[in-house]
Length: 469
Image (cartoon, rainbow, N blue to C red; front, top):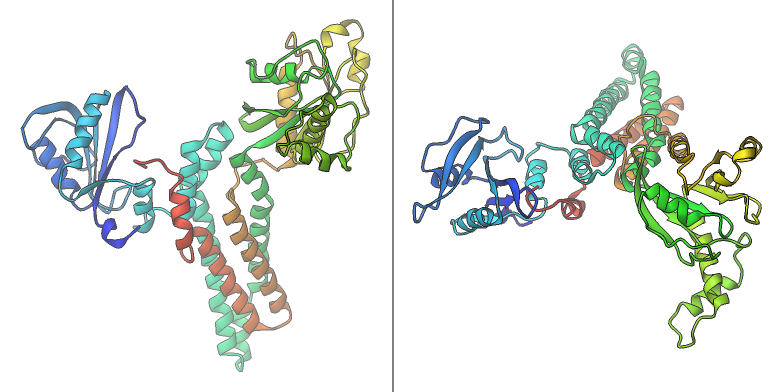
């Protein structure tokens, strides 16, 4: 974004397109006050107080709509500069007319995607961590995503990281004092007193945050839960039952599902991609079939045989199982099952078609984690609870994570590595090296917050926002 464009006054529709009760149009920049006066023909209202005003076309004087208007003088606004909001009726005709009037005013232009939030960052109103949290909050689809994103957007991460940074700067000043007065033992010893304990405390805090990072990333991006098992066990029926709609074709014929089918769900507040796979006749090991599958999928003119299609389905099932966070291994009393294979992912053993075994259900429950009926709904709530509990336990989801993105994790990993080295240097009496590693720890945390070395990331991050935010 060029410097001359940063001085422009920008505007955009901040609510969704289409007919609605209310549409909010935001204006930000040095001419925001002049624009509001021109549209209403009156003086600016009291700051942060909503008032009713007639919105007029400045050229013709025609009343376009009756609206609520708000005035936010900088720097106490979201963007840190003079800003205004116009809450008009949400008909497409009204919105088009008001935006057209703004477009024709000199010195105004339509905002780019994320430009309001970018100005808030550049004017010091938000840290980069808060910006990323706000982006995630706008896109949140589940309760846990909302809670985690809100934590970042409200500055909890910034407070924590700034607190670590301030503690490190204090430690650094004590180290430098000990170095400067190394010939005066009393002063040096006094400067170093308690430094090792403070480094240990900080190290433990950073290590804990990093341990929670994988769970934070999974909450943001979603978990992959794969349904697998022998043919005709009811995998597609289970997918439809958990999705509460018909996603996959269900048939009495074994082998109906030949490809991977995915559906996004909210299970206990967790974002889950539930995957249905082809029924397995045996546990698919990687062999030369994988190469033949690639050749067959490469677009040759020869039609695929039934065996080719089945082999490709089995291979795809194996591939999706390798990247699963959790596997639901499904079988049923009326099918010939195969042994539950050993997998890296945690596995929940699920017996379907409980409606066929009502008279002897207890015996089956001893051998299976959950007994369900996708047909009648029996046991589905218990299965959902088990899925949520397994994912929460595996990814340590006791509380929302402060680290949710690969960029943040990388910066924290560097900070932790430097801090660990500083601890070792201090134990060895290498004060100069310890000070340098503490300094590098501070720089890594500043990169996490967005104080330094982030210019190349900004365009990518702010492009995630919609226009008007």
